[in-house]
Image (tube, rainbow, N blue to C red; front, side):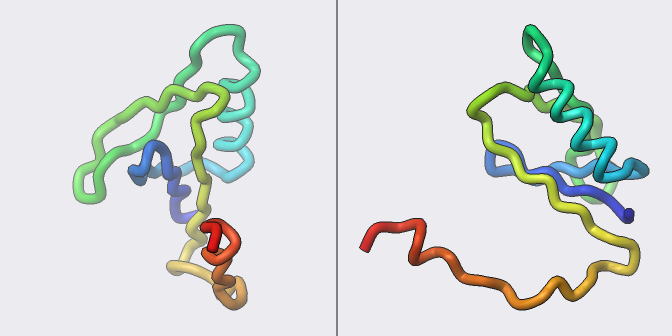
Length: 87
């Protein structure tokens, strides 16, 4: 895995040198914690800075793995925007 991007609060963060399963397990452990829990990520592209994301119920996030070599063809992009906005 080249890196894992995490979209949180409308911003993109990344995690390197970890597997998708490790990151998912960290998020699941944070959700199961009895109090607030944080996960460590990188902020920035050039010289990354350490950032911490508070993981709580109701805060949406997306985890997007980027394979080595830039990416694989995962098939066509499906436009679902008409299903998200009432007409």
